[in-house]
Image 1 (tube, each protein chain N blue to C red):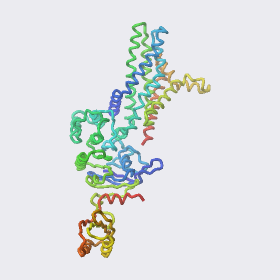
Image 2: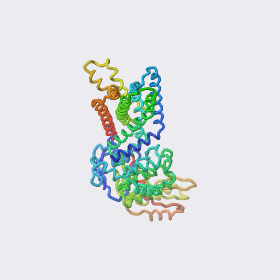
Image 3: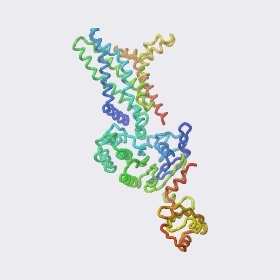
Length: 234
Length: 310
């Protein structure tokens, strides 16, 4: 645990030092802000449902952009060797990097907190779905971080890491909107595998163990796959 | 201290290290020599647990590398080739991070950092970004990284590459100083460096150990043919060769040099010292002897003999 916190601290510091992180934050805020507020006044409703509807899609691209450097950069500069010969286990490294990613993804959500505050000033805002939405966003962010971490562990090229991560996250996000492509017997499974519906459940304020289990299994799968990828590199 | 048996590493079907065995005692300074691509770095990477051996065993103290990898990493300080460190970090931040991972805290950490700054000459660069350091300075930061926990075993992959001659001498002194109590393994392809710093030299060629001996023994070994170099003024090549070849067991070859100086190389068979006879033969003529050197075998010749491509 001790080592995990050091690795996480170092990675977090790196995130906030590198310019890429600020670019990603700016793009995220611009895209979500514009997409949300361009239709906000048309609907004339004091809620954030539209914001949370769009979030899985933006996260599918933003989160892999954040996580792409976690392993790929180390593999490219060779610092991976110095890291691996320090007295740490694979697990310390993966969990440390993962937690740093989750903290950073949560941090980029913080500026969006002005939206509900702003909306509450203009109308009656129901805070339940907002809190649920943010809880769901953190869970979804954690799941996508684990996937992005795995993609990053596969290659020394950050762009490839980004594209692979984005493709997996995008597929998970859109899966339950593509049901007409799948044969009838598979529908239930595919529907369960899609990330959007699980996220929307949480965002409505319904805390169901199935949704939480879904995100936890995605995190576990991503981290385990990253572990396998590291093992393979020896 | 370190026991290696049958260590082998294949990259796909290319054999980088082929069944090597050696044992290293506490307090030895070992030099791993070999041409480029001989398997030095691969061997060191397996010793530090970065690479998993295809076959074979590594035991460090009583720990097996497959089972107690973290315990072994705690004993070892390792500087990888060309010191790949995080380019975006400040030197201080980086060393502080390594100290934390090495479980140093509070006063002990501050004391150790100060000691390493002095030892590795990092004064004045602690506030700089690693990426903007010159190669030599980066190498020193890497050295501080490797020595952070005052490890029992220090493994250095080409520690002096990229350093200027003054720094090389400094680093050698540091290594020798550490080597009094600790075990040091270093790889290099600079022969004079190995000769100057190491107690024992292991030469690797095409993934195999071709020589493993104490430095002074190694320099005396090799084949027993003696070579004598002569330079003569005023001598005719054919004449000189004919005269010298009459001495028992000597074959002379000539190579005319500038200013009418004739260079001669005498290859001597047998164990008797031919030098008195050679001198006597020259004295009987009117040639002027300007050079008379018996070539001792240095590490370079031995290295070349052992690692020549077949």
